[in-house]
Amino acid sequence: MRRPLRIANASGFYGDRFDALREMLTGGPLDVLTGDYLAELTLLILGRDRLKDPRLGYARTFLRQLEECFGLAHERGVRIVTNAGGLNPAGLAEEIGELAGRLGLPVRVAHVEGDSLPPRPGGLTAHAYLGGTGITACLAAGADVVVTGRVTDAALVTGPAAWWHGWGPEEYDALAGAVVAGHVLECGTQATGGNYAFFRDHDVRRPGFPLAEIHSDGTSVIGKHPGTGGVVDVGTVTAQLLYETGGARYAGPDVTARLDTVRLAADGPDRVRITGVRGEEPPPTLKVGLCRIGGWRNEVVFVLSGLDIEAKAELVRAQIEESFRRAKSRPAEIRWELSRTDRPDAPTEETSSALLRLVVRDPDPDAVGRTVSGAAIELALGSYPGFHVTAPPGKGAPYGVFEAEYVDAGEVAQVAVLPDGVRQSMPRPVRTRVLEEVAEPVPPAPLPKGPTRRAPLGLVAGARSGDKGGDANVGVWVRSDDAWRWLAHELTVERFQELIPESRQLKVVRHQLPLLRALNFTVHGLLGEGVASQARFDPQAKALGEWLRSRHLDIPEVLL
Image (cartoon, rainbow, N blue to C red; front, side, top):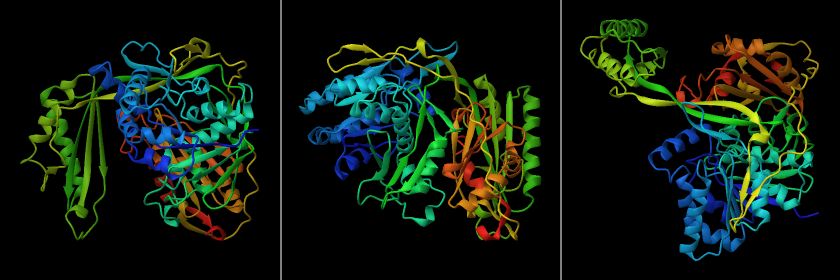
């Protein structure tokens, strides 16, 4: 029995707080510090970087962060594990080795390869989501820094935890516990009060980054360094557990974690204990993220001020359509969206104004370039009164598409490149299990009949939402058993679609997680071809949960 692994996070995305690496190294004792830099959009950005220069393809910010506090990490004996290698983990590992040499640090660097697959026809990148076994092997070989490419976000924690505690590949419950802890840590300050529905209950102006104490049985305690901002409580951890997950089975390359077995409990100030997590065999397939250029996109935002907003919008639409007709060139996709941000008798011009957004897409750059910009500019003196736009129309720009497919895990060879250069192939999972949905639990008995009041859902429920390719995820949770009894009966798929009208023609799937008093909804296709295609106003569905919380429905007064 070894003491708990003390592992923390210092980055939730490429562009996160620059000083976080130093803050976490100086804030308290750690064994391992992780950094997550890879989102679906990031791989597209790194792919375009590497097209310009094949030596790139990694998160350059990480190198600058490391240069500032590499000596500090070495002095304190903190191992660093990061997926900042992106499309070029070997290149970043080499750069880190050279940096250590310039600083005179006897640091051992290793990296993990194998995620990169041949791009599909017309594609830019193809990367399998690897597990944590390569990280485990690198740490076991004495690496001080481990660089990976596309691994699952939780693998940055499961790999070190398996190394620290000596877990075997079939210790599913322990591995699943580390997956859950890893999922809580992966998005940085989202676990410590950032982006939190009940933010008004706490001071979250500068939340600290999270850490976990992972025990030998896979149970863990989530916390943060003393004196840092934000908050860690059952609510913040619940919100992050629901973020970008789906049903009860949360599948990964090393283990499938059963989210319906997770139990959370306060364990003192800014500490939440996670217990009860059960694990199952991983699926026989690996997820592969595919990035490609989807075409060309342009956007014009017209500002409509004062009176007759709807009529002004109708005029612009008719004029643009007529311009396309005369030019005999019409973009393949045209979308108009009128945002009524105006108010009557407004005290400022800005608050008297609405925004009319025109978005066009086409495989041909010319179809979204001069055809669109010319049509918009030519209206400047001949359209609605007060005509202006938020920015001059441009030439248009390429947009990316993220798609996912699944391949047999046996087709992907994960390799740990150890500090001495030895290449160690990682074994395949001993056993696998085809993923099946867990049967929907019977909802608890509803609240007895009583008076209700029309009010926003957010007065009793929190929510957090996000994206997975073209799908949106919305997790909704409540903080009492009575509220859960009501929520489980009230917020059905039909009610969700009533409250979120744009989901009515889409497939919406609901999952119950009673131990978390939570529901998780997946809205298939809401985001079109993914974040990079910018198919809607909120392309990553980050605020979809907050919109849902603002919708009114009949809520029992006893809950209010």
